[in-house]
Image (cartoon, rainbow, N blue to C red):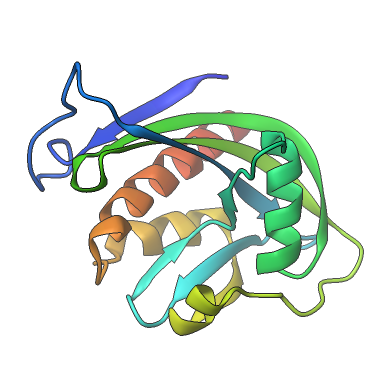
Length: 171
């Protein structure tokens, strides 16, 4: 899968770059540019922290990245999805948590009806809401967002990389 970006506290202006020779905890996740029949993209708006992100989440032990994506879309958006193609991957070095986070982005389409999400307590506490917006509008909102928490800076940079690559590939 194509590497779209490497993000660190240094690239975000929040601190130093990755620490070579240091042990980081590995986290893998899957993200969806999830399209509905009208061409809208699902975006998760976190009202408590005032920023947008793509649906998706962590890969559980024994799960493939694709299985994680399908599960996370079902939980966060409330629908089944069909993965069409990969977009790319983003690597984040979060020194604050000594974590390397590899996110795999995919284009997927809604399959069937969109029902009620099954949000986790933390997602409910963040005020997570699903909005359906044009891809360009999602990118514009993410570009304008000012996150209310540390992780949000990484999330916004990651989502911008996925959306820019998706829009570039459509040309």
